[in-house]
Structure formats: C-alpha cells, structure tokens
Image 1: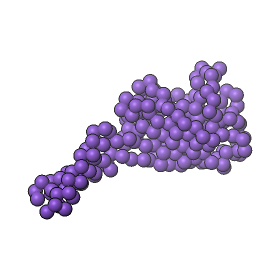
Image 2: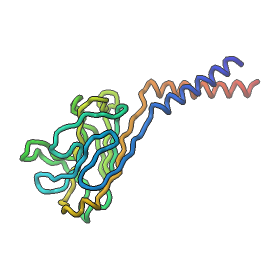
Image 3: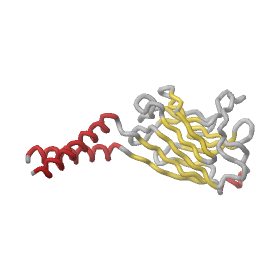
Image 4: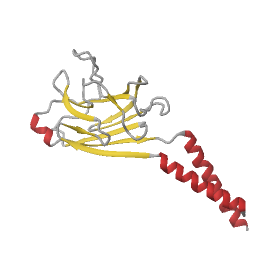
Length: 195
C-alpha cells in the first residue's frame, strides 16, 4: 500500500512539473508598429523592391534581445486583412542593396541558428531545428523578418492585423519525468486493482 501511495504522489508531482514547463504566449496587433508582451518592438516596413515586410524589430532594423520569462523554440504568426493578392513570400530573396537578407526567416543571432519555417498564404510557422541548442534563451539576440509579395498603401496598415504565439517545448528531462509519473500512476492503479 505504501508503494502505491508513493507512486501516486510521484505521478502527480511529475505531471505538475510537466504542465509548469510547457507554455504558449499568444498576442496580436494592428497598425504599423507596436510591442509584444515582453516589450520587443515589431513593425511593418518595406523591402528594397517596395513590397511589404513585417519584423521584430523590423526589416533592416538590426536585432533585439529576448526579454521573455523563459526560452522559446517556436514562433507562429497569421496575418489577416491583407490586400488582395498580397501574401507571405515563400521565395528566398537575395541580399538587398542595403546589405541584409530580406527573406522570411527567424534567426537566433547569438547561436547563429536559422530556424526552420513553413509558409502557407498568410501564415508562417518557425521552429528551432534543435530546441536545446538553437532555441532563443533569455538575453539571446534574435530577429524575425517576414516578406510579402506586394506593396501596401499607408491606409491599409489600419486594417491589417495579426495573431502570434511564442511557444516552448519541454526539456527531455521533463518529458522523462512525466513518463515516469505516468508509469507510476499506472502501477499504482494496477496494484490497487489487485488488492
């Protein structure tokens, strides 16, 4: 009976630890510029060819330093009310005449990691190829650039909006702890049924 109680307590602790470590921070915005929940500035501006761009801190504006409560391994964003025919550009853009790459990308500058991406119309997902070594930790320099396929007039900025999310993947040790907890819970239930 003592073993069953111990395994049950272990299961609860492991599941609480797992829940505490996983998080998603969602936010949204409209207009030409603003800040995310951690104070990082974002802005719409233009590429060298005049097409729309969105970024943190903004296309050609350098980098920002991650000030979040924890590290992140994913970034997701969906734009809405884009003008007809304008969507996220899936084609890589060569280095602009201004000396920086204008392609849609998320970069952990501190670790030199370019995150993977998946683009579909007005939505893009970015994720660290290795969420242990490529994730963005507190104090890391990073930037996000999103290039679009067409220009936007100034009046359109009042209509365009987006929904975004930063996400964090649990550490492998946390996942192992959760697995141990679930196994303990299973054993506790099994022992209880036998008695």
